[in-house]
Length: 245
Image (cartoon, rainbow, N blue to C red; front, side, top):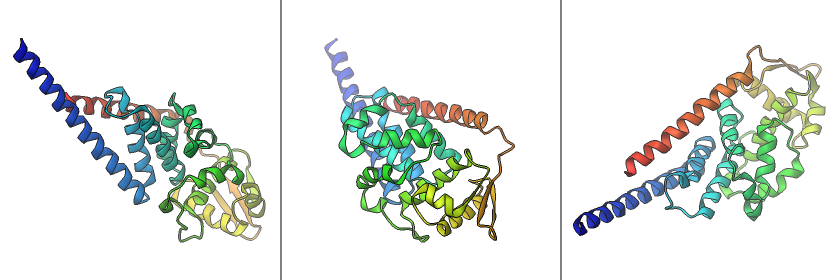
């Protein structure tokens, strides 16, 4: 019996070491993705790490919350897309979201995330606290003259505005968003229309942006995407648990 107990304890210790190594690898990989500005992938990895409590106690609860906060940071910085909306949904539904309000670094994260997930306009004043929490590589100015945050929030707000208006002048749009001037708003809108992340058209003569409601049932597609994402997330956790057993 003593031999069996010894073997069992030895196996448990090996399992713990294996899980610790796996989590360390995942954490390093998430930070590398983040540093290389692959924010959407980093957000997914950070959120996956933040749910490690479901299968191990190798990470402290406070550290798991920090991972959740970093997942939100990277999701907010990501370019607008259906996949980004899925990641926002995963974090929005996390029962620990409001706990981030007690951590100075992440105090504004839950409110901004909620607005983004629910397609509400985010005002420039709401971004100040969020921007102060960013690392240097997350504050970079891109080729279009916008910071990563400005571009991410502008793209989000552009989609949010499309739910409120059928058309809008770029001068009004820039003023409404409170982030940039009308000329830059037009450039961002043109890029989003070209890459398919915004359904609309531009009247350059009038300086007008027309929004075209999609024929697709986007809400049902999004629900389907979220179901698939949730399933994949659970599958990852089961796989990790099996590896550690």
